[in-house]
Image (cartoon, rainbow, N blue to C red; front, side, top):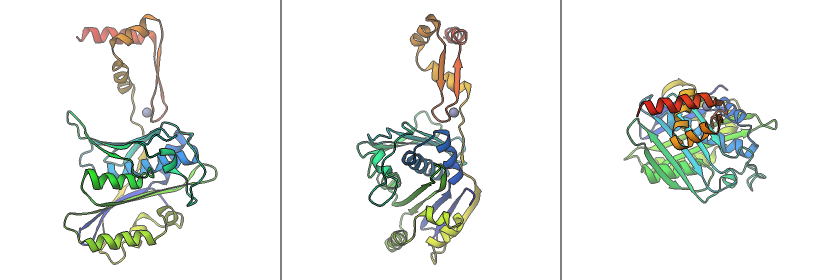
Amino acid sequence: MMDKLVKATAKNGDVRIIAAITTDMVNEGVKTHKCAPTAAAALGRMLTAGALMGAQLKSDKDSITLKINGGGIAKSVTVTSYSDAHVKGYIANPNADLPVNSKGKLDVGGIIGKNGSLLVIRDMGLKEPYVGQVPIYTGEIGDDIAYYYVNSEQTPSAVGLGVLVDKDLSIKAAGGFIIQMMPGADDLVADLITYRLEEIPSITDLIVKGMSIEDILEFIFEDMDLKILDEGIVPKYRCDCSRDRVEKALISIGMKDLKEIYDEGKQEEIVCNFCNKKYIFSNKEIGSLIEKLENNK
Ligand code: ZN
């Protein structure tokens, strides 16, 4: 089934839904970073959460960055996404892996750890980004995002994220949903949805069966007046780094360090965390950069 993201409502707009199949997108990210199975599931869940949350942004200039660090062997996972659901991300330790947990699932909570926090950074093009932070709840990521919505945005939410890793380490299925209760919604509706979500198979099982994202929503929200609002958003893994941006990062190390590199006759290599692309600044280029900065003073 092809990747696709949809927004929908149920129960006359009392329930807001955003859901996606993200198999190809996650596969691209996991391949880029050559992840071990548990690391692949962790990065894949974060990328999927990023795509879902990014699609809620109002302007195409806005971005949202999620960062989770629970002191586990994964170290940290960072994802940035935009309103067109294009996403980039990385896991600090792509080799992080553990035996499956007691439920027979990849132990994402185990590699993330529980001693730390989830950061949600919303950059709306203002001077300062808006930063929300919650302590890690389970480290399974879906639970942590739900906990963030309840605590930081006072929005009761159910978040489901799934990544199925195949034996050859490719992604067999990935997807997720965020279901939110609007203010004034009936508590019984929330209870009904919670009950349904407990009863149904995981989202990856439904994707493997060949169900589309619309089929999956029809299945969850049967008899709940489901309305799919807009279709055709395709989540994509894409890095937007450029030599210009990397140059800004190089400048941010400070004049003193730049001069030191230059005086020692060295070049500087910067690797993009998100796509592993290498940018090399020769000694001569660092010299002209210093000159340019001094002339701009
Ligand atoms: Zn890049």
